[in-house]
Image 1 (cartoon, one colour):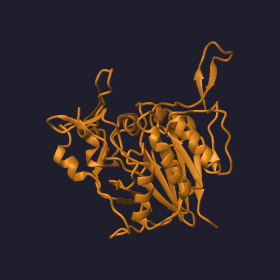
Image 2: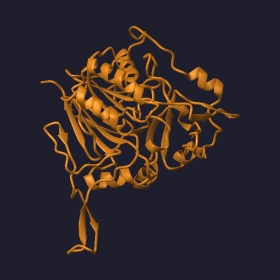
Image 3: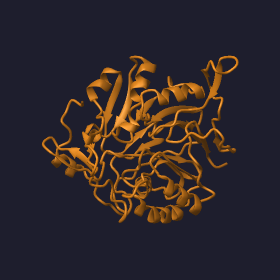
Image 4: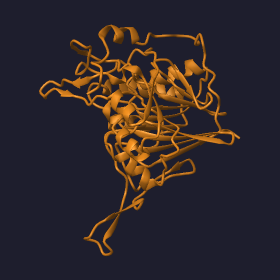
Length: 353
């Protein structure tokens, strides 16, 4: 359990992003970077037969070895863990300096750490952890990360409403309260908790954390009534998931790279918010969960596809909660940009020559 009862209703209402238009009053100067490498440590899918290219590196079967007495030699080759969650390791190079950030940590305490070990990816040099929001399928791997690093302090940036108690009340099913993050426990594990509602710049101004996202589209309405939050005295519909935020980078000569966890604020809201904050119009890549799966969200697929087609990203990797119908629609509309996501895949994006 978390140490506080959760966000009060007044606080939730006060924190609700207000629609904004035009240029940002106080624009953010996001420093362009020379290279970004995004490695998906955890996703809902692992396909060991996918092929890569000059930009995409895949992990295949044989990335790990496990004991298996039924085989001659007593071992077998294994792939990577796929689970309902998301985690990405982001390496950012600007000049001669390379820094590493961890964006979300997956569902279980073990998947992210296990996949990193099989991939030969060191988590010791992670400079900070960034949580897209407080849902447990993005924060479960924090326990494994803490066990891997020991007691060394590690900054973790999140929205102050990530501690909110939430539950799902689906008709015909038992009420399911979701695991809630504990600030006390995380601090005890060595995480330096940094709470921010506003946009944050990291790594000398080269990484932007959006903070709360303006909700400006007419079609991205958020979570259905089954998703509820505790106000301190009652359960209420929580459509906005106000703590949802994204990571944004600017690859020199190409445009913005946007990473989402679930995209609860809406993929188009998020991209437009990033464009408005930075003044950079061009979207180079969109990677992460877009939350377009299931009956409540499938009506949002057509306008999302139309808007993304107009944005014309060079790389589109919808993962996690995007849903198979949206995947098919996006692949058909943007065949040159769309790439099938998979645990263990790396995407290398470099500045224009």
